[in-house]
Image (cartoon, rainbow, N blue to C red; front, side, top):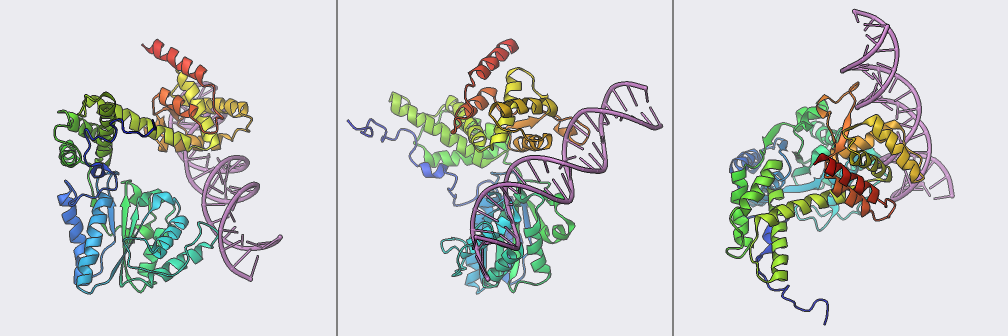
Length: 428
DNA sequence: TTTCCACAGGAATAAAGGGCGA
DNA sequence: TCGCCCTTTATTCCTGTGGAAA
C-alpha cells in the first residue's frame, strides 16, 4: 500500500473552494470600504480629464485594504484612460523587501525592466541590475532614463514606504525630479504606509511635495469583519460547515488586535484546515468549531514567533537566550545592564566574543520592533531612563523555537524548560 | 540647587563582504 | 586583478537626561 493511497483525504468535508481564503484572492468588489474607495476615486479621476494628479499618501494598519484598493482602482483607471487616448504606466514595489532607498531604486528599475510585470506597459529591453555595486548617482539616473521611456503619465506605487525609515533619498530624488522637471512624463507617487508618524519623520524638503493629499483607511470594525468573513465563508465552505459563533470569534480576535481583514481571513482558513483534517481522521465531524479557531490562533502565533526567531542573527539569538534565561528565573522585566551581563556569559559559552554594550542594546531594540521582546518602559523611553525588557511571547514558545534551531547550536534547553515550569508552579 | 553617575541613543567611523567595470 | 562603490554589522565617542546624594 502506498503512502498516498486514498484514505478519504481527497474527500471534501468542509472546504469546497480554498482559493477565496488565500491572501492573493481579489474580491470583485472591495468589501466594507465604500467611503474610502469613493475618496480615492475622486483623487484619481482628474487624470481622465488630462490633468496632473497630486501625490497621494495612504495611511492605515496592515490588512485594512490600502494595497487592495490601489490594485483594484489603478488598473481600472489605466484602462479607462487608454480608451480616451491617455497613456498611463503603473509601477509598483514593496519597499519592505529592500529596506534602503538604494535597493528600492534598483527594485523599481528591475520591475520596470521585467517583461512579466503585470501592471506596466513598459517593455524595456535592458538587463536587470544586481543588488549592489553601482554608484548611487548612476542608479537614480538609470531610473529616470527608464521612466523617460514610459508613457506620458506614470503612477509610482511605493507600498510599505515607511520601512525606508529615515532613509528618504529615493523619495527626495523622486520629488526633486518632479520639481526640477527632470522627467518628461507626469509622475504621480502613491505612498502606502502602515506607520501614521511616517510623514512627521520626513525631511521638510520631501514632506511638502510628497504628502500633497492624504487618505486614511481606518481599522475594520468587528461588524465589518463579520460581514467580510460571512461572504467568504459562503463561497469557501459547504452549507452548515461553520458552527454558530465561529465567524464572530474570528472577527473578534482580529478586531481586538489590529482590525485586519487579512488576519481574520487567515484565522478562518487555518481553523477550516484543522477542522477538515480532523474530519478526515475521525470521519464523523464536518464543521468548524470555536475550539478550531482558538487552536488556529495559537498555531499562527507560534509559527510567526518560530519564523521570527529562526531568522535572527547569531548574537541576536544569544541576547534572546539571555532574556529567556532571566524570564525562566522570574527575573524579567530586566534592565539592559542585567541582560547584557547574562548575554556576555552566553556568548562566551558558545565560544564567541560578546558584542559591546551598544551593539547588544541595538539587538534588544530590534527584537522589540519585531514583537519578540517588549520594552515595558517604552512610554518613558529616552536618555537617562533605564529600559526594561521582557518576552513578548510565551516562554514555552520561545524555548520551542530556540530548540528547533537548524544549526543545532543552541541545545540542552531542558534546564531552561524545568526552570520555567518551576516558575509557573510558583506563580500558581 | 548642584553635582555626580548610570544610562540611552545619535553620529561618525571601521571592517568585511560582494558586484561591477577597466 | 584591482579599485571603486555599495551594504551590513559593529565599535567608539560623545551628549543629553533622570535620579540620587550632598
